[in-house]
Length: 410
Ligand code: GLA
Image: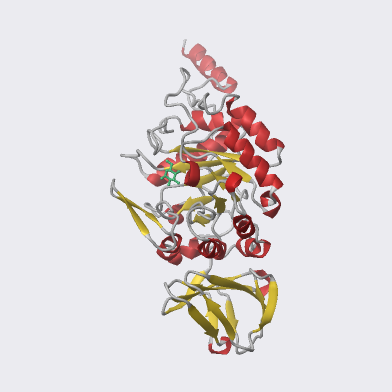
């Protein structure tokens, strides 16, 4: 009898019917999907949950026809509000049939047909921040759902997560995506509350480092429910010291941009310059259908985008701040540097910068520019023209909240 049982047990395990997991689980993010900061459009800043098929198609059309796609923007990401309030009887997520009458797959095919990529949003908790079904307990099922739909990017938020820990929850979803098998950029969005820069590198390709952005230069907007949104300079300031954690395929994400929303063109220009200097992912958050030519010119400035997309992928740092005049610098490949002079104050300022009295030292990445030894040519990246070299002082007038960005070329 014993012999028979042994034979049965052995043959079952040879056939793979033994106890244990026959499903191969993969771990770790898809590597190499975001070697430069991802660029695209996200629906949240302008539309919140008022999103639909028409908006997405028009946005994709304009991304291509306006030159935004040619400038590098290629992800269309639908944020919160794309689902129905309940999962279906199989437990699957459902795209809202009123907002997306032809279904999500057809829309994704449309966006792919334009040569663009597509992203969706969900949350690690039981519900999303806007009250739609969250992923908690459905990680592997949802990952298979996304892979089958053919998405390329998942933003994964952090509302309604009582009782779970961020590194575990994000690792579970990352592994689920990997196991589902379709390469999907994984965008962590837990607002920097659990220091994702310390554990996020094997888990995701980018991570938010702050609470939500607000369309203002330097303000804090206090919500009645006891949380704050932040002007772009507040976010830049708040996370300037975690730059060593950011780099190719693991970016500090300073949030979707507010360019073209409620600030003036001067502030928008400075906002865009800062996101380029900080190597932040560049997600536009405006309504392309109402975009002014000034906004489009800011977002498609190729010289600025080259600073953001530089292959070294080094987040810039604040070199100095004096009397409201800030100098931010960023090492670039080929021993180039980008330098942004930014007037953070409420009054006009004059820059008179004597390069010979300065040297830039990047203590985190080991780069150095010593202007007493090396002369650099200067290129003004908004004017797209050369403007002397570092032998002479750089002199310019800056209105309040204005900035000028130079590329230094040895
Ligand atoms: C959070 C995120 C935002 C956005 C909303 C959606 O606040 O930080 O970027 O995704 O949720 O509800």
